[in-house]
Image (tube, rainbow, N blue to C red; front, side, top):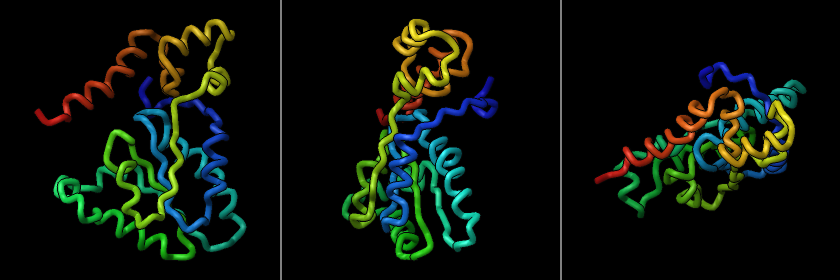
Length: 186
């Protein structure tokens, strides 16, 4: 089963409520965390569902969801630490509009979370972590002892819950390390 076929729904109310509490505060919301802990899922499934139900009341409010925004920052911009990346100008422009609320995802393995202060002090970060054991157990098909063994072995990355074999889970969890180490300059 690939990532696009996953049909797991895990309510992450702790993070969803943090985003809801930050709505319309005039700040860009930065959703950061380690890779594959479902930052994007949080925004595009859970939070988007919440927003769609609120938009139906007829108010003209717009929401912007730049996903993995750190990829919009060029290598040249990263080298020049004295000048904010163009992305920050775009985000600041959106934030000046009264009817726009922006929610940006970015991996904390990239420069976005370290440089979000470049959004002229208008960044409000929600750091998403892998599933807690309690969240994990809500989606795990088995008893607590089996769940603890699985959680202790593979952690709280949500997609591992849809994988059937230990080999699939191990391979899935190794890939971020391979991707990170292959992208480092020698």
